[in-house]
Length: 274
Ligand code: LIP
Image 1 (cartoon, rainbow, N blue to C red):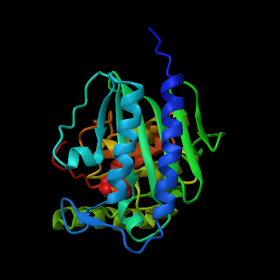
Image 2: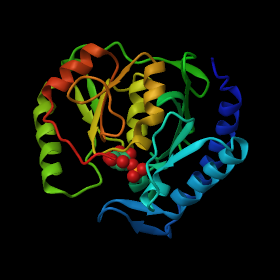
Image 3: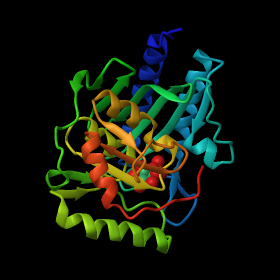
Image 4: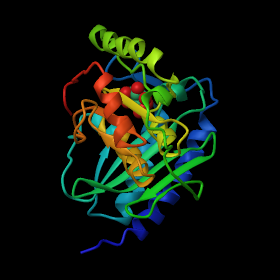
């Protein structure tokens, strides 16, 4: 039976907007409470934790049987429990490094998955007042206006989002630099916003043509997947083939043709799975 997601959407949208205001209020502060997580350049702030708690508290009050995968809850030891149950997948502040530096490209990324497939995706950058939303079968929107991916099919014409990552592991750095060096002369340009979700939002609205990254987690890409596919794009594995959402690998593009050209060019990297 078709599930009516209107109520889920209304509740999550209002919580996300409120939490966005908290991020916006706090981003300029020079005295943020910052701690490291998996390594020297992987951070969590008090705001990441506060926003995640507010979202989970609000949603579980409204929908007591829903499950959660939250970045900070998993970081502090919870299981990453990806099942068929209705599950909210939350990155409270995607682009935490940007937030720490008051660089205004951070966002809330939140998605609802049912039967392991996306039904709602929201990416909200309150600093730039960019609210990306999508629901299964209903299209993708930026601040209420319909968005679609670009028509770019040739790698040579593409603006590609990639990232430098949150790890100083030498092997990972080598792969990132090899890909950068190989792609640079073959494409229009390379960009990195410092947030997986915002990179995906740029692909969804046609401001960029593709994005790939190794080392991301499901909470970085869950909302982006819904928004890009509803905007007409594709989200696959960077080696080609179906996305494996716990593999910590992603490639998104405005169409399958471009996705496959990019996949063929990439040096592959396989992080430890979630
Ligand atoms: C980060 C990303 C960033 C990426 C990292 C990391 P966080 O998320 O969005 O683009 O390079 O892999 O996942 O830690 O800021 O929520």
